[in-house]
Image (tube, rainbow, N blue to C red; front, side, top):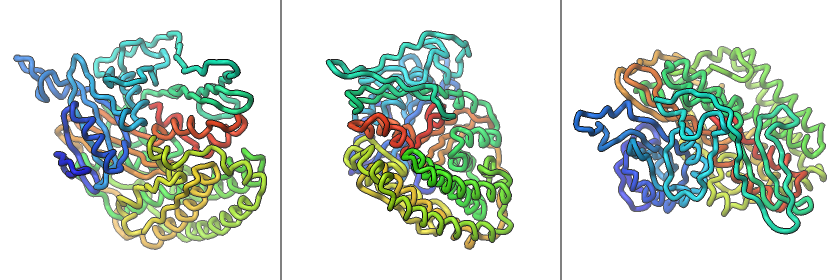
Length: 522
Protein backbone atom coordinates (compact mmCIF):
# COMPACT_ATOMS: atom_id res chain seq x y z
CA UNK A 1 0.00 0.00 0.00
CA UNK A 2 1.47 3.36 -1.03
CA UNK A 3 1.00 6.41 1.21
CA UNK A 4 2.48 9.73 0.11
CA UNK A 5 4.99 7.96 -2.10
CA UNK A 6 6.06 5.45 0.57
CA UNK A 7 5.31 1.75 0.15
CA UNK A 8 4.01 -0.01 3.28
CA UNK A 9 3.26 -3.69 3.80
CA UNK A 10 -0.47 -3.48 4.46
CA UNK A 11 -3.04 -6.01 3.29
CA UNK A 12 -6.74 -5.52 2.66
CA UNK A 13 -8.84 -6.54 5.67
CA UNK A 14 -12.15 -5.67 4.06
CA UNK A 15 -13.93 -2.89 2.24
CA UNK A 16 -11.76 0.26 2.55
CA UNK A 17 -9.79 -1.22 5.50
CA UNK A 18 -6.08 -2.09 5.48
CA UNK A 19 -4.04 -4.00 8.06
CA UNK A 20 -0.32 -4.12 8.72
CA UNK A 21 2.35 -4.69 11.35
CA UNK A 22 5.41 -2.50 11.56
CA UNK A 23 8.31 -1.96 13.93
CA UNK A 24 7.80 0.54 16.71
CA UNK A 25 10.67 2.60 15.31
CA UNK A 26 8.70 2.98 12.05
CA UNK A 27 5.59 4.47 13.67
CA UNK A 28 6.73 8.07 13.29
CA UNK A 29 7.61 7.59 9.63
CA UNK A 30 4.27 5.93 8.97
CA UNK A 31 2.38 8.71 10.76
CA UNK A 32 4.32 11.34 8.84
CA UNK A 33 3.48 9.72 5.50
CA UNK A 34 -0.20 9.77 6.44
CA UNK A 35 0.11 13.43 7.44
CA UNK A 36 1.91 14.31 4.19
CA UNK A 37 -0.94 12.75 2.24
CA UNK A 38 -3.53 14.82 4.15
CA UNK A 39 -4.75 11.97 6.37
CA UNK A 40 -5.52 11.95 10.07
CA UNK A 41 -5.07 9.80 13.15
CA UNK A 42 -8.40 8.23 14.14
CA UNK A 43 -7.50 6.16 17.20
CA UNK A 44 -4.59 4.89 19.28
CA UNK A 45 -4.70 2.11 21.86
CA UNK A 46 -2.59 -0.64 23.39
CA UNK A 47 -2.87 -4.29 24.31
CA UNK A 48 -1.27 -6.83 26.63
CA UNK A 49 -0.23 -9.65 24.28
CA UNK A 50 1.92 -11.66 26.65
CA UNK A 51 -0.55 -14.56 26.61
CA UNK A 52 -0.18 -14.71 22.80
CA UNK A 53 3.62 -14.95 22.91
CA UNK A 54 4.58 -17.59 25.50
CA UNK A 55 8.31 -17.67 26.04
CA UNK A 56 10.24 -20.63 24.75
CA UNK A 57 12.86 -22.29 26.97
CA UNK A 58 15.44 -20.04 25.36
CA UNK A 59 13.57 -16.93 26.45
CA UNK A 60 12.23 -15.84 23.07
CA UNK A 61 8.58 -15.07 22.47
CA UNK A 62 6.72 -16.24 19.38
CA UNK A 63 6.25 -12.62 18.38
CA UNK A 64 9.89 -11.67 18.70
CA UNK A 65 12.55 -11.06 21.34
CA UNK A 66 10.74 -10.33 24.59
CA UNK A 67 7.46 -9.48 22.85
CA UNK A 68 4.70 -8.78 25.32
CA UNK A 69 2.72 -5.64 24.51
CA UNK A 70 1.56 -3.86 21.37
CA UNK A 71 0.57 -0.36 20.34
CA UNK A 72 -2.15 0.02 17.71
CA UNK A 73 -3.12 3.02 15.62
CA UNK A 74 -5.79 3.61 12.98
CA UNK A 75 -5.38 6.33 10.37
CA UNK A 76 -7.55 7.77 7.62
CA UNK A 77 -5.69 7.62 4.32
CA UNK A 78 -6.62 8.18 0.71
CA UNK A 79 -7.26 4.43 0.33
CA UNK A 80 -9.33 4.06 3.49
CA UNK A 81 -8.66 3.10 7.10
CA UNK A 82 -5.10 1.91 7.78
CA UNK A 83 -4.72 -0.11 11.00
CA UNK A 84 -1.13 -0.75 12.04
CA UNK A 85 0.33 -2.44 15.10
CA UNK A 86 3.81 -2.56 16.58
CA UNK A 87 5.12 -5.11 19.09
CA UNK A 88 6.71 -3.71 22.23
CA UNK A 89 9.09 -5.27 24.73
CA UNK A 90 7.47 -6.91 27.73
CA UNK A 91 9.81 -5.34 30.29
CA UNK A 92 10.00 -1.80 28.82
CA UNK A 93 7.01 -1.23 26.53
CA UNK A 94 7.58 2.07 24.74
CA UNK A 95 7.01 3.69 21.35
CA UNK A 96 7.72 7.11 19.78
CA UNK A 97 5.48 10.04 20.68
CA UNK A 98 2.95 10.50 17.86
CA UNK A 99 1.55 13.77 19.23
CA UNK A 100 4.38 15.65 17.53
CA UNK A 101 2.68 14.79 14.24
CA UNK A 102 -0.95 14.37 15.30
CA UNK A 103 -1.68 16.43 18.45
CA UNK A 104 -4.91 14.49 19.05
CA UNK A 105 -2.74 11.51 20.05
CA UNK A 106 -1.80 13.18 23.34
CA UNK A 107 -4.74 12.12 25.51
CA UNK A 108 -4.96 8.71 23.85
CA UNK A 109 -1.30 8.11 24.72
CA UNK A 110 -1.82 9.25 28.31
CA UNK A 111 -4.83 6.95 28.69
CA UNK A 112 -2.87 4.05 27.19
CA UNK A 113 -0.18 4.58 29.80
CA UNK A 114 -2.72 4.74 32.64
CA UNK A 115 -4.33 1.48 31.55
CA UNK A 116 -1.36 -0.56 30.31
CA UNK A 117 1.87 1.14 31.36
CA UNK A 118 2.92 1.62 27.73
CA UNK A 119 5.04 4.75 27.44
CA UNK A 120 5.13 7.32 24.62
CA UNK A 121 8.81 8.25 24.59
CA UNK A 122 9.51 11.97 24.39
CA UNK A 123 5.93 13.02 25.05
CA UNK A 124 5.63 16.59 26.35
CA UNK A 125 2.60 15.84 28.54
CA UNK A 126 3.15 12.89 30.84
CA UNK A 127 0.28 13.61 33.23
CA UNK A 128 -2.23 10.87 33.99
CA UNK A 129 -5.55 11.03 32.20
CA UNK A 130 -7.97 8.31 33.33
CA UNK A 131 -6.60 7.35 36.73
CA UNK A 132 -8.40 9.28 39.46
CA UNK A 133 -6.81 7.46 42.37
CA UNK A 134 -9.11 4.45 41.89
CA UNK A 135 -6.17 2.10 41.37
CA UNK A 136 -2.60 2.41 42.64
CA UNK A 137 0.06 4.24 40.69
CA UNK A 138 2.19 1.68 38.89
CA UNK A 139 -0.72 -0.72 38.56
CA UNK A 140 -2.39 -1.09 35.16
CA UNK A 141 -5.97 -2.41 34.79
CA UNK A 142 -5.74 -3.68 31.21
CA UNK A 143 -2.80 -5.93 31.95
CA UNK A 144 -3.92 -9.54 32.15
CA UNK A 145 -2.34 -9.99 35.59
CA UNK A 146 -4.01 -6.90 37.08
CA UNK A 147 -5.07 -7.34 40.70
CA UNK A 148 -8.29 -5.37 41.12
CA UNK A 149 -7.23 -3.48 44.23
CA UNK A 150 -9.40 -0.46 45.01
CA UNK A 151 -7.65 2.51 46.61
CA UNK A 152 -8.66 6.01 47.54
CA UNK A 153 -5.67 8.21 46.89
CA UNK A 154 -5.63 11.99 46.91
CA UNK A 155 -6.08 13.03 43.30
CA UNK A 156 -3.81 16.06 42.95
CA UNK A 157 -4.04 16.76 39.22
CA UNK A 158 -1.46 19.36 38.09
CA UNK A 159 -3.52 21.86 36.12
CA UNK A 160 -1.56 24.32 34.00
CA UNK A 161 -2.05 27.75 35.57
CA UNK A 162 -2.03 31.19 33.97
CA UNK A 163 0.35 33.36 36.01
CA UNK A 164 0.64 37.13 36.31
CA UNK A 165 -1.45 40.07 37.50
CA UNK A 166 -5.14 40.03 36.66
CA UNK A 167 -6.09 36.43 35.76
CA UNK A 168 -8.56 34.58 37.95
CA UNK A 169 -9.58 30.92 37.97
CA UNK A 170 -13.13 29.58 37.88
CA UNK A 171 -13.43 25.86 38.64
CA UNK A 172 -16.61 24.29 37.23
CA UNK A 173 -17.61 20.70 38.00
CA UNK A 174 -17.07 17.83 37.96
CA UNK A 175 -20.56 17.73 39.46
CA UNK A 176 -22.94 19.98 37.54
CA UNK A 177 -26.32 21.51 38.29
CA UNK A 178 -28.05 19.54 35.52
CA UNK A 179 -28.36 15.81 35.01
CA UNK A 180 -25.31 15.58 32.76
CA UNK A 181 -22.16 13.52 33.00
CA UNK A 182 -19.30 14.73 35.20
CA UNK A 183 -16.39 16.74 33.90
CA UNK A 184 -14.17 19.43 35.40
CA UNK A 185 -13.51 22.70 33.55
CA UNK A 186 -10.85 25.08 34.85
CA UNK A 187 -11.29 28.57 33.37
CA UNK A 188 -8.58 31.23 33.53
CA UNK A 189 -10.15 34.62 32.90
CA UNK A 190 -9.60 38.35 32.85
CA UNK A 191 -12.88 40.10 33.49
CA UNK A 192 -15.39 37.84 31.80
CA UNK A 193 -13.09 36.88 28.89
CA UNK A 194 -11.58 33.41 28.79
CA UNK A 195 -7.79 33.30 28.51
CA UNK A 196 -7.52 29.54 28.90
CA UNK A 197 -9.69 26.51 29.52
CA UNK A 198 -8.35 23.18 30.70
CA UNK A 199 -10.51 20.09 30.96
CA UNK A 200 -10.19 17.20 33.36
CA UNK A 201 -12.24 14.19 32.38
CA UNK A 202 -12.16 10.52 33.33
CA UNK A 203 -14.86 10.74 36.01
CA UNK A 204 -17.11 8.27 34.17
CA UNK A 205 -14.46 5.56 33.87
CA UNK A 206 -16.41 2.30 34.00
CA UNK A 207 -13.81 -0.30 33.15
CA UNK A 208 -15.60 -1.19 29.91
CA UNK A 209 -12.49 -2.40 28.09
CA UNK A 210 -11.66 -4.70 31.03
CA UNK A 211 -15.26 -5.91 31.17
CA UNK A 212 -15.06 -7.07 27.54
CA UNK A 213 -12.33 -9.59 28.40
CA UNK A 214 -13.71 -13.13 28.39
CA UNK A 215 -17.15 -12.06 27.20
CA UNK A 216 -18.98 -14.01 24.49
CA UNK A 217 -19.57 -12.32 21.13
CA UNK A 218 -23.31 -11.70 21.54
CA UNK A 219 -22.99 -10.17 25.00
CA UNK A 220 -20.13 -8.05 23.73
CA UNK A 221 -22.51 -6.40 21.26
CA UNK A 222 -24.77 -5.33 24.12
CA UNK A 223 -21.86 -3.81 26.01
CA UNK A 224 -20.44 -2.09 22.94
CA UNK A 225 -23.76 -0.37 22.36
CA UNK A 226 -23.59 1.08 25.85
CA UNK A 227 -20.18 2.73 25.57
CA UNK A 228 -22.02 6.00 24.87
CA UNK A 229 -25.77 5.58 24.95
CA UNK A 230 -26.58 8.38 22.51
CA UNK A 231 -24.52 6.54 19.87
CA UNK A 232 -25.81 3.03 20.54
CA UNK A 233 -26.52 2.04 16.93
CA UNK A 234 -23.18 3.37 15.71
CA UNK A 235 -21.20 1.48 18.36
CA UNK A 236 -23.22 -1.70 17.97
CA UNK A 237 -22.76 -1.66 14.19
CA UNK A 238 -19.01 -0.95 14.43
CA UNK A 239 -18.59 -3.77 16.96
CA UNK A 240 -20.59 -6.23 14.87
CA UNK A 241 -18.67 -5.20 11.74
CA UNK A 242 -15.43 -5.95 13.59
CA UNK A 243 -16.67 -9.37 14.76
CA UNK A 244 -17.95 -10.22 11.30
CA UNK A 245 -14.62 -9.23 9.76
CA UNK A 246 -12.80 -11.39 12.30
CA UNK A 247 -15.04 -14.41 11.70
CA UNK A 248 -15.34 -13.99 7.94
CA UNK A 249 -19.12 -13.82 7.89
CA UNK A 250 -21.17 -11.92 5.33
CA UNK A 251 -24.27 -10.23 6.70
CA UNK A 252 -27.51 -10.45 4.72
CA UNK A 253 -28.04 -7.36 2.62
CA UNK A 254 -31.40 -6.58 4.19
CA UNK A 255 -29.75 -6.50 7.61
CA UNK A 256 -27.22 -3.91 6.41
CA UNK A 257 -30.05 -1.69 5.17
CA UNK A 258 -31.80 -2.07 8.54
CA UNK A 259 -28.59 -1.09 10.33
CA UNK A 260 -28.34 2.04 8.20
CA UNK A 261 -31.99 2.83 8.97
CA UNK A 262 -31.32 2.55 12.71
CA UNK A 263 -28.20 4.71 12.36
CA UNK A 264 -30.05 7.48 10.52
CA UNK A 265 -32.91 7.45 13.03
CA UNK A 266 -30.30 7.83 15.77
CA UNK A 267 -28.69 10.73 13.89
CA UNK A 268 -31.99 12.58 13.45
CA UNK A 269 -33.01 12.08 17.09
CA UNK A 270 -29.73 13.48 18.42
CA UNK A 271 -29.68 16.46 16.07
CA UNK A 272 -33.28 17.34 16.90
CA UNK A 273 -32.51 17.26 20.62
CA UNK A 274 -29.38 19.38 20.25
CA UNK A 275 -31.08 21.98 18.06
CA UNK A 276 -33.65 22.32 20.81
CA UNK A 277 -30.97 22.67 23.47
CA UNK A 278 -29.17 25.33 21.40
CA UNK A 279 -32.39 27.33 21.31
CA UNK A 280 -32.79 26.88 25.04
CA UNK A 281 -29.26 28.14 25.70
CA UNK A 282 -30.11 31.47 24.07
CA UNK A 283 -33.42 31.73 25.98
CA UNK A 284 -35.53 30.60 23.02
CA UNK A 285 -37.60 28.08 24.94
CA UNK A 286 -40.02 27.83 22.01
CA UNK A 287 -37.28 26.16 19.95
CA UNK A 288 -36.45 23.78 22.78
CA UNK A 289 -40.06 22.64 23.15
CA UNK A 290 -40.70 22.27 19.42
CA UNK A 291 -37.57 20.28 18.60
CA UNK A 292 -38.06 18.01 21.58
CA UNK A 293 -41.66 17.45 20.58
CA UNK A 294 -40.41 16.25 17.20
CA UNK A 295 -37.72 14.09 18.81
CA UNK A 296 -40.31 12.50 21.09
CA UNK A 297 -42.52 11.62 18.12
CA UNK A 298 -39.60 9.88 16.43
CA UNK A 299 -38.66 8.01 19.60
CA UNK A 300 -42.21 6.82 20.16
CA UNK A 301 -42.48 5.54 16.61
CA UNK A 302 -39.12 3.75 16.99
CA UNK A 303 -40.47 2.07 20.08
CA UNK A 304 -43.61 0.91 18.28
CA UNK A 305 -41.85 -0.30 15.14
CA UNK A 306 -38.69 -1.81 16.60
CA UNK A 307 -39.40 -2.47 20.27
CA UNK A 308 -37.07 0.15 21.78
CA UNK A 309 -37.19 3.94 21.72
CA UNK A 310 -33.42 4.26 21.40
CA UNK A 311 -33.02 1.07 19.33
CA UNK A 312 -30.90 -0.71 21.93
CA UNK A 313 -29.85 -4.26 20.97
CA UNK A 314 -31.48 -4.05 17.54
CA UNK A 315 -28.09 -4.63 15.87
CA UNK A 316 -26.54 -8.03 16.63
CA UNK A 317 -23.58 -10.03 15.31
CA UNK A 318 -24.69 -11.54 12.02
CA UNK A 319 -27.42 -9.03 11.24
CA UNK A 320 -30.37 -7.35 12.94
CA UNK A 321 -32.65 -8.50 15.74
CA UNK A 322 -35.86 -7.01 14.36
CA UNK A 323 -37.34 -6.39 10.92
CA UNK A 324 -39.36 -3.55 9.41
CA UNK A 325 -42.71 -5.02 8.45
CA UNK A 326 -44.51 -1.83 7.41
CA UNK A 327 -42.68 1.40 6.64
CA UNK A 328 -45.71 3.58 5.91
CA UNK A 329 -45.72 5.27 9.33
CA UNK A 330 -42.01 5.98 9.12
CA UNK A 331 -42.35 7.43 5.62
CA UNK A 332 -45.20 9.69 6.75
CA UNK A 333 -43.35 10.89 9.85
CA UNK A 334 -40.13 11.54 7.90
CA UNK A 335 -42.02 13.76 5.46
CA UNK A 336 -43.75 15.69 8.20
CA UNK A 337 -40.56 16.08 10.25
CA UNK A 338 -38.75 17.55 7.26
CA UNK A 339 -41.48 20.14 6.70
CA UNK A 340 -41.52 21.17 10.36
CA UNK A 341 -37.71 21.29 10.62
CA UNK A 342 -37.54 23.58 7.60
CA UNK A 343 -40.14 25.85 9.21
CA UNK A 344 -38.24 25.90 12.50
CA UNK A 345 -35.01 26.69 10.67
CA UNK A 346 -36.67 29.75 9.15
CA UNK A 347 -37.59 30.87 12.68
CA UNK A 348 -34.02 30.33 13.90
CA UNK A 349 -32.64 32.19 10.87
CA UNK A 350 -34.84 35.22 11.56
CA UNK A 351 -34.45 35.36 15.33
CA UNK A 352 -32.06 38.29 16.03
CA UNK A 353 -31.03 37.26 19.55
CA UNK A 354 -30.26 33.70 18.49
CA UNK A 355 -28.25 34.85 15.50
CA UNK A 356 -26.34 37.37 17.60
CA UNK A 357 -25.45 34.81 20.25
CA UNK A 358 -24.43 32.06 17.82
CA UNK A 359 -22.63 33.96 15.06
CA UNK A 360 -18.87 34.45 15.64
CA UNK A 361 -19.08 32.53 18.93
CA UNK A 362 -16.87 29.55 19.69
CA UNK A 363 -14.90 29.75 16.44
CA UNK A 364 -12.55 26.94 15.38
CA UNK A 365 -10.83 28.12 12.21
CA UNK A 366 -10.44 25.58 9.38
CA UNK A 367 -6.64 25.62 9.51
CA UNK A 368 -6.63 24.86 13.23
CA UNK A 369 -9.34 22.22 12.81
CA UNK A 370 -7.15 20.45 10.25
CA UNK A 371 -4.05 20.75 12.43
CA UNK A 372 -5.72 19.34 15.56
CA UNK A 373 -7.90 16.73 13.86
CA UNK A 374 -11.39 18.10 14.46
CA UNK A 375 -13.81 15.52 13.12
CA UNK A 376 -17.49 14.69 12.61
CA UNK A 377 -20.18 17.34 12.40
CA UNK A 378 -17.98 19.85 14.26
CA UNK A 379 -15.21 19.25 11.74
CA UNK A 380 -17.57 19.69 8.80
CA UNK A 381 -18.62 23.04 10.28
CA UNK A 382 -14.94 24.05 10.11
CA UNK A 383 -14.44 23.03 6.46
CA UNK A 384 -13.21 19.50 7.17
CA UNK A 385 -15.07 17.73 4.35
CA UNK A 386 -14.97 14.24 5.79
CA UNK A 387 -17.81 11.73 6.22
CA UNK A 388 -17.18 7.98 6.00
CA UNK A 389 -20.60 7.53 4.38
CA UNK A 390 -19.39 9.70 1.50
CA UNK A 391 -15.68 9.00 1.00
CA UNK A 392 -15.69 5.27 1.88
CA UNK A 393 -19.32 4.12 1.84
CA UNK A 394 -20.35 0.70 3.09
CA UNK A 395 -23.56 -1.01 2.00
CA UNK A 396 -26.13 0.51 1.58
CA UNK A 397 -24.54 3.99 1.57
CA UNK A 398 -22.73 3.16 -1.66
CA UNK A 399 -26.16 3.26 -3.32
CA UNK A 400 -27.72 6.21 -1.52
CA UNK A 401 -25.47 9.08 -2.73
CA UNK A 402 -25.17 10.73 0.68
CA UNK A 403 -25.00 14.53 0.59
CA UNK A 404 -22.45 16.18 2.90
CA UNK A 405 -22.94 19.64 4.40
CA UNK A 406 -19.91 21.77 5.27
CA UNK A 407 -19.26 25.35 6.40
CA UNK A 408 -16.14 27.44 6.82
CA UNK A 409 -17.11 29.74 9.71
CA UNK A 410 -16.46 27.15 12.41
CA UNK A 411 -18.70 28.93 14.93
CA UNK A 412 -21.78 27.83 16.89
CA UNK A 413 -24.02 28.99 14.06
CA UNK A 414 -22.09 26.89 11.51
CA UNK A 415 -22.41 23.82 13.71
CA UNK A 416 -26.15 24.44 13.98
CA UNK A 417 -26.38 24.85 10.20
CA UNK A 418 -24.66 21.51 9.69
CA UNK A 419 -27.14 19.88 12.06
CA UNK A 420 -30.11 21.32 10.17
CA UNK A 421 -28.72 20.08 6.86
CA UNK A 422 -27.94 16.64 8.25
CA UNK A 423 -31.45 16.25 9.69
CA UNK A 424 -32.96 16.93 6.27
CA UNK A 425 -30.49 14.62 4.53
CA UNK A 426 -31.00 11.82 7.04
CA UNK A 427 -34.76 12.07 6.65
CA UNK A 428 -34.24 11.68 2.91
CA UNK A 429 -32.03 8.66 3.54
CA UNK A 430 -34.65 7.13 5.83
CA UNK A 431 -37.23 7.41 3.08
CA UNK A 432 -34.82 5.97 0.52
CA UNK A 433 -33.95 3.04 2.78
CA UNK A 434 -37.59 2.22 3.55
CA UNK A 435 -38.48 2.36 -0.14
CA UNK A 436 -35.42 0.49 -1.42
CA UNK A 437 -34.67 -2.12 1.26
CA UNK A 438 -34.22 -5.54 -0.39
CA UNK A 439 -36.09 -8.65 0.68
CA UNK A 440 -34.36 -11.50 2.44
CA UNK A 441 -33.09 -12.74 5.78
CA UNK A 442 -32.15 -10.27 8.50
CA UNK A 443 -29.54 -12.36 10.35
CA UNK A 444 -27.25 -15.37 10.10
CA UNK A 445 -25.58 -17.21 13.00
CA UNK A 446 -21.98 -16.20 13.52
CA UNK A 447 -19.50 -19.06 13.84
CA UNK A 448 -17.26 -18.87 16.89
CA UNK A 449 -13.63 -19.11 15.71
CA UNK A 450 -11.25 -21.73 17.10
CA UNK A 451 -8.12 -19.62 16.70
CA UNK A 452 -7.01 -16.10 17.55
CA UNK A 453 -8.50 -13.67 15.05
CA UNK A 454 -9.11 -9.93 14.80
CA UNK A 455 -11.27 -7.38 13.06
CA UNK A 456 -12.20 -3.72 13.01
CA UNK A 457 -15.43 -1.82 12.45
CA UNK A 458 -15.76 1.76 11.24
CA UNK A 459 -19.06 3.68 11.18
CA UNK A 460 -19.94 7.36 10.74
CA UNK A 461 -22.02 8.07 13.83
CA UNK A 462 -23.95 11.29 14.37
CA UNK A 463 -21.04 12.84 16.29
CA UNK A 464 -18.31 11.53 13.99
CA UNK A 465 -16.53 8.30 13.13
CA UNK A 466 -16.93 5.43 15.61
CA UNK A 467 -14.26 2.74 15.56
CA UNK A 468 -14.24 -0.61 17.36
CA UNK A 469 -11.33 -3.04 17.16
CA UNK A 470 -11.71 -6.60 18.47
CA UNK A 471 -9.49 -9.58 19.05
CA UNK A 472 -11.14 -12.94 19.66
CA UNK A 473 -9.19 -15.60 21.52
CA UNK A 474 -8.81 -19.25 20.53
CA UNK A 475 -11.57 -20.07 23.04
CA UNK A 476 -14.07 -17.97 21.05
CA UNK A 477 -14.25 -15.31 23.79
CA UNK A 478 -13.32 -11.65 23.47
CA UNK A 479 -9.68 -11.07 24.37
CA UNK A 480 -9.32 -7.33 23.61
CA UNK A 481 -11.89 -4.76 22.51
CA UNK A 482 -11.16 -1.09 21.98
CA UNK A 483 -14.09 1.25 21.24
CA UNK A 484 -13.15 4.74 20.08
CA UNK A 485 -15.36 7.83 20.20
CA UNK A 486 -14.72 10.99 18.11
CA UNK A 487 -14.92 12.99 21.32
CA UNK A 488 -11.27 12.00 21.90
CA UNK A 489 -10.33 14.28 19.00
CA UNK A 490 -12.89 17.01 19.63
CA UNK A 491 -12.68 17.74 23.36
CA UNK A 492 -9.34 19.60 22.97
CA UNK A 493 -10.92 21.79 20.26
CA UNK A 494 -13.56 22.95 22.75
CA UNK A 495 -10.67 24.34 24.81
CA UNK A 496 -9.64 26.30 21.71
CA UNK A 497 -13.14 27.40 20.68
CA UNK A 498 -13.86 29.14 23.99
CA UNK A 499 -10.76 31.37 23.89
CA UNK A 500 -11.61 35.07 23.81
CA UNK A 501 -15.30 34.40 24.43
CA UNK A 502 -17.14 35.33 27.59
CA UNK A 503 -17.74 32.75 30.30
CA UNK A 504 -21.57 32.85 29.92
CA UNK A 505 -21.18 31.64 26.32
CA UNK A 506 -19.48 28.42 27.42
CA UNK A 507 -22.73 26.39 27.81
CA UNK A 508 -23.75 27.41 24.29
CA UNK A 509 -20.35 26.56 22.78
CA UNK A 510 -20.19 23.31 24.71
CA UNK A 511 -23.65 22.26 23.52
CA UNK A 512 -22.79 23.09 19.90
CA UNK A 513 -20.14 20.35 20.09
CA UNK A 514 -22.12 18.09 22.48
CA UNK A 515 -19.26 15.71 23.13
CA UNK A 516 -19.42 12.47 25.04
CA UNK A 517 -17.84 12.13 28.46
CA UNK A 518 -18.65 8.43 28.71
CA UNK A 519 -17.49 7.57 25.20
CA UNK A 520 -13.90 8.58 25.87
CA UNK A 521 -13.63 7.53 29.51
CA UNK A 522 -14.20 3.78 28.97
